[in-house]
Length: 414
Image (cartoon, rainbow, N blue to C red):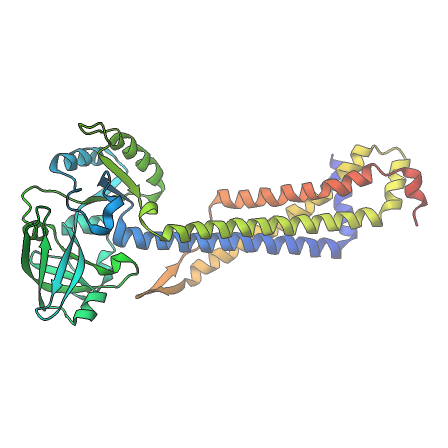
């Protein structure tokens, strides 16, 4: 085997220009894949953090059937006090859960005393909400941020604030109908303006949960959902499976499930964008495989064609076909290994440099978000193994052709 390795290295040195061109092509492919994986992964993680840390949380628990009719924000599908305690009991026992927030969602009419429009409201406990979605304060573009909200105050979405011409400190009235059909109104002071976002959430205002219960004349401490923040998002699947098993097994008197558990992926359309990023990464990897396959196969076919006489000579002096086969496969392996090693070194160096120089970008009104490309060891190893394996596979057909070549015919070749 050592002799085969020496011969393969010697042959690669004999055709240095071809060796360098092929290795460079493989290197460029490896660099493109690893840099794309690092940058796209960093962007995806940052966007997931923006969504989960400023709006949704990592997980949410609802009463069964609530999400199917969430557009109307139904009050008759809220979680009762006993159901809330059952969820809290499970969350308190889970070491992966960092915080959770009780939310009461409702629809109301928003009036500035001259005009009226509809608004969606998230009623929250400020302390719980800030622990669960700590970046929510950053969405307040005008007004006081500390403490989020107090009783008698409202955070108005930018869309409604502009349309109704209300400003921080203005007095407004909310009118809502409870589940019994009773209508009630209550005055509020505009504490701040929330950054506008796309989708139904663009009309979501924030009030104190006790104000919502007063507005709805709600005697029981019901909530629409419980938002959950995990210590690390890597534990999402494990916590979801655990909660789904424990809460999903609870049935009502009609033997129907009581709870629904949803991950942020089921609640946000951004998950589709995240999947597109993953598909693009897969596509880039397929392109890398194609580049390596074509490059190595082309080089090895040319090597066999140019060395027909040499192959005939070594076969005539008694070299076994499997040795000839091993020689060409070893050359393909070394080409792939060389290109991969150089590509990995360049990629890791580039990632390190990007983190030092701190590339920033803007996302909506958030300025100067830092892109911190990182790549896991497993991803580097996976790409490297794929490239080297494809290099060996691409060498098989030319190597097989060389091994099966008739010595007499090869020696006669001109």
